[in-house]
Length: 402
Image 1 (cartoon, one colour):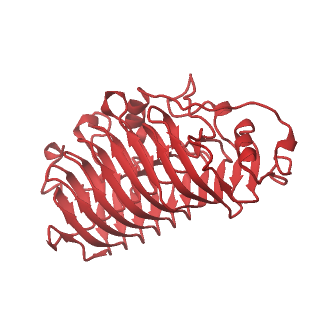
Image 2 (cartoon, one colour; image 1 turned 180 degrees about the vertical axis):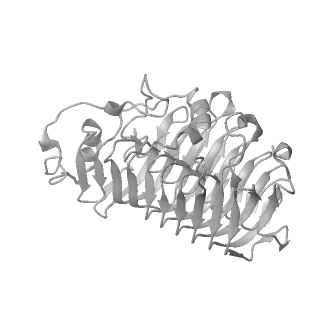
Image 3 (cartoon, helix red, strand yellow; image 1 turned 60 degrees about the horizontal axis):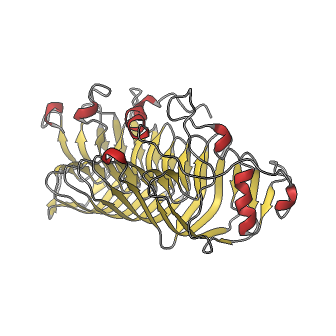
């Protein structure tokens, strides 16, 4: 898909988190015997058919194949699911590109069926979900419902995909009772936690997430009900419903839909969330925590809505009904000397924001490269009507931001 032009934008926090990287266990290799499936040949024209739990297990032995579900799958007999595909950084790569032989690079078509009761609790591991890591130009997870998941890890944690290095996640629904937790990495960091995808360079299109997501540990980064951190990819026609809880101090990028989007566009998306954040948390939004493509072009957030109840201590900073602001924090100022550009158009918000500083009903902080246009809101801030933009450069200088 050629998706790497803007990847320097997330490199700072991805690299720092990967310094303490711990991979999940899992398997690859194995038999190429077609008889382990319910039929098919593993090609695009004739995908392997999966009808049982045992056949789903075999996907990890054919990571580059084409698959289609022909029946619902219940994983309640697995006390702790091993994710399909591992994220192991390539030795000579950039820290974000995985070893391709270990990750899922094929196509998994749910065929409109459901995988339910997934427990994948690996509290010391990264790349955790039903799929741990997906990558490759043609990789996709599509037409699938995942129901009732309990997933836990340190970093790159998602109910369906822990890390999407490339490809697309399309028409995937996360329903039922779902809890996704991440954080508490060595040194206090962790993150990239989302209901469907944890960390993503893959497009997310037509997806729905219902989940309670939790980001723990101090100085953790990016969490959202649909996705954690996203770069150089689109989010379109997606929705999120549930809760976001951030328990530690100093965390960055907390969103109802996604923690961040270093991408060109987020369009036609909705969120309906309750959010509770900790001391010193920054860049918080009912839809996105922060955005900004980093190439000089803005992230365009259009035709979106957020219904959010956000509770924050007064030490939390840059909170918006749609987005907290463009990415900017003092500790990364050497790499990102000014906030990323954002253009919010034709968006709506409702609900309330209680607490925090630099708070707007649409956009928390608007640097001189960012704007909110054609938006409406009846969101209350501390019980009163609020300005759509909480502060601009005329009100708060970059030196005054944390």
